[in-house]
Amino acid sequence: MLKRATALLVLLALCGLLPAVAQEAQEEMATKAEEMAGEAEGMVDEAEKTMAGDGASLDEVLASHYEALGGTEAWTAVESVRFEGTMSMGPGMEAPFKMTMKRPGMIRLEFTFQGMTGIQASDGTIAWMVMPFMGKNDPEEMPADMADQLSEQADIEGPLFGWADKGHEVELLGAEEMEGTEVYKVKLTRENGDVRYHYLDSEYFVTVKQEGKTKVQGQEMEIETSIGDYKELCLATSVVVDDGAPCEGDVLVLPHSIESKPKGAPAGQAITITAVAVNPGDIEADYFAMPVKAADEAGEAESGE
Image (cartoon, rainbow, N blue to C red):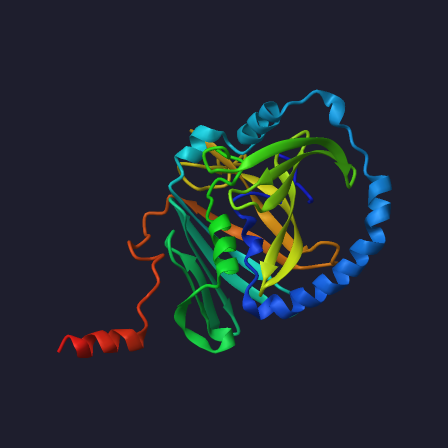
């Protein structure tokens, strides 16, 4: 069983989707984080210990990473996946959520807060949302920056799998020490030019941290995401593998604890995953599609008379 990682991943990189109810708090933390980052920059440069001369190649590191998460063959068998759990966005701001992803590029996130349910979704072409917290109860298309974030999260197995076929570029920057653990630093440049840094534990080859810049309401923010609590999940049954529940067949390895925050901030949005269903069979054909607004339906009915 893999060790309990303390510091993020893949597909779930879920935390990039900051619900509107938490954005104001996130922006305040971002301002403070920038100040702290400026003060700490010199200290980081001196403290960081680079150990890039260990001889590992990009292909070797990525091959070990794929194997650590269950292998490319097992992930190819995943057509859809559903996660359920809790999002904590600050004191008194906790929301249960359900996120479903399906190939190719479909995703739907639902989260409930103060009795209202928000939705962020994409059918692979149109990204849309319902945000009752902002007085918007009808579905509407997402702004371009939010739509891009959602599209990035819809990558089921994560961007490092099949990166060349996805139009990305990947570079191994070497090994370094992070919080007492040796990690491999992998630079991924997305097809659209966005840069993400993935830090892979050099012993277990799972991603323990991810960094990159993203836009929130038009403001560019540097986000860091920590991932941990990796668990083995039986592909055939979606049951967590342990001594009492062995698995016959392929096993997937997934994180169950994720936290995203502005770089340098003391806290951010934390996600705890409590249940995972691989290839659930109850997904409706139009589940990811943007619903027609009630007003539009009425207009269509009148024009058809």
